[in-house]
Length: 407
Image (cartoon, rainbow, N blue to C red; front, top):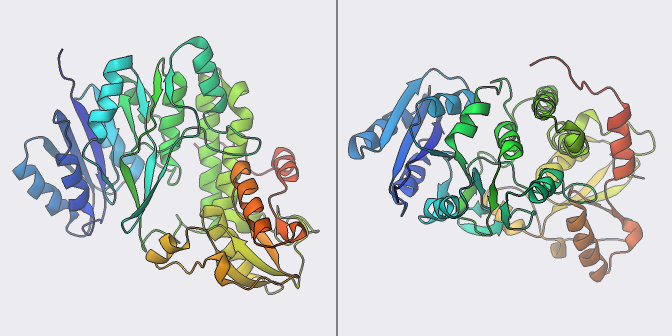
């Protein structure tokens, strides 16, 4: 059987500190039929020279030097010269275990798949834990299987839980399908770029394989943990652009009816996590919408240091009427490795008057946290989570800029 080449696209911009680790992890793959395309997107540090040095050592490496155009543009430039029958992606400050592409390729061959999906490893300076996709593992190729995939791909719980993670770097794609979609993505989208490709491609794929493995290390470090794309307004505009693009993609595939509610929940996630300050005060009954009954004078503990938790924490800290007693997470040690000021709940003295805000979108995760908090002696009346009914109603009825016509 003929071995098929895989092209791996790595967009590179000012990552000299991490780049060699990433490239080395690709070169060490047990699957050797690789074409490695390093796209230097106008780096101002030594990243471009590092790319050239690696190209001189290994003939599988191609380097593209271009003016800075952003992540989308860099990926488009890489894919445009890719010659592999399958395409993978990597971010230059991450790395992968050596069996990754052999594992993905084996699934491609076994099922003749268009897309193969893995989980990821959250890596905090060497402290790692695996996060798999929420959709059951297996092959999705029949009409019924693809219907299930479509109905749970973005949101697969009562409120919000990603069915398939949107990232490009833990997947292997048939090249033709990537080529069909990647040039449609506008470079203006600067956050959520992966979803603009992965979800339309997954929707169009005739065969998708979901694995229960995770080889890709998504690395958290001080440079990225508390950062965002820009101002609250810029983050807001980006989330609307992303929503509009995905809506149009699903409409072109005649599947928007199936995807509408999932997409709304995904966009709510992005809007609150990225531009929480625009919405926190819209409910006069609570100064931290969509958390009910949080009023001036309250003392709060923010539980959960993910994107939503960081957004709520930043806003609550800015509210003169609130006292933030603590910012806690069950994985506090991981965040502390990246110099984020997060503590363990057991290190905080919780008083009867304190209110615990659980800052997760996933309803299943919320219930698990609630049960743990109750076991520690915290009363149920002290625990607050998203008012999901009010949240969806607000975004369904309000004018937040859907179909703004900006792309």
